[in-house]
Length: 146
Image 1 (cartoon, helix red, strand yellow):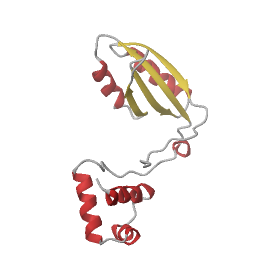
Image 2 (cartoon, rainbow, N blue to C red):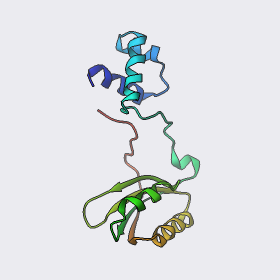
Image 3 (cartoon, rainbow, N blue to C red):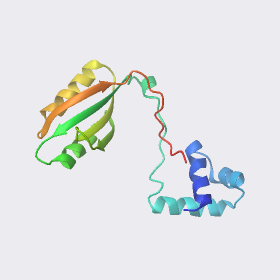
């Protein structure tokens, strides 16, 4: 990746709906250059897709939880993959330290969270969990900041 690739990514991070024509004009290169570069970045898996950034609170998901889980019997990846398929879950991390995995998930209310935690704890190989509720979100950036 060169400087132009980075600048294209930064431009798309600002507004992924920005036209290639507009990006080409801003970066002072041809439209075909931008089009070819973006296609290559997509093909190489650097750009994986385009999504809207949603305000979770405005669609009713007011509760964010950070959940640590401890697993047994070396079934870490299988359990993490199963958890990651739940629609409440926005991130599953394989971590170091006292816990095996960290989950970030969003819920409409405490009952929603309670049901999710009970499902997690009933899964095979899940030994225990620790849940923390997020009080304020200072930063939760979805874009790559370079």
